[in-house]
Length: 119
Picture: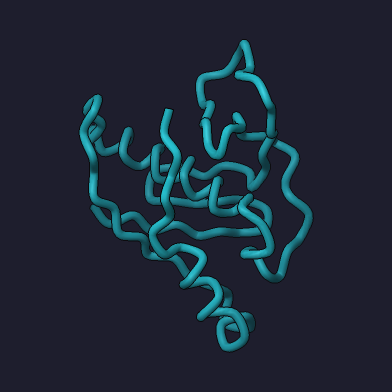
């Protein structure tokens, strides 16, 4: 499954949705909300308060985690979700032309396969 993600400083955009580039991090599962992601022992939910401008979006894992929300959203939008079923995903991601020369190798490495802790 090919998923294109535009990682903007204001919004993340995919074929089927646009959402603010903002995250809330919690140590415990939030009692409310439809979109909650557990990653690295923490719980994340989307926020309307965007992450401050980052030229280098690989500085921490926030944009990687936003990508997981984007991927999950596209899987649901294309009705490909099935419990206990792995879905191979290829990402098409890019950078603004003015950032490309300095950051493309770092951005590519950022999205290389991760060992994602499930459960």
